[in-house]
Image (cartoon, rainbow, N blue to C red; front, side, top):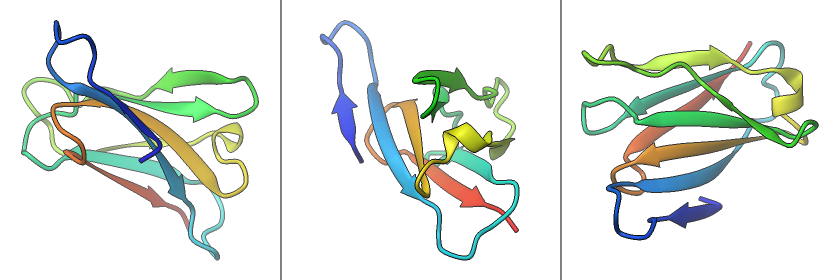
Length: 102
């Protein structure tokens, strides 16, 4: 976890930022997988573009809850073997994130 923000108390949930290290030997096109560990949808997941310095929103899990989601990562979203994500969740570590490749 890089940071967490709980807001001003007027909204429920947290905004957490995580850095994920891509394991050595993982090559090719990468995907970021995400799922809420409490069996509900993750409110939102964004991935950071290290070149443009912007966040890209990933597809929502939706209602009704459709289970785990994944999205392809752009090369500029993986720099130095690190993927940065921003998640709106109800408690720290509610979401499980995975990076997969070839």
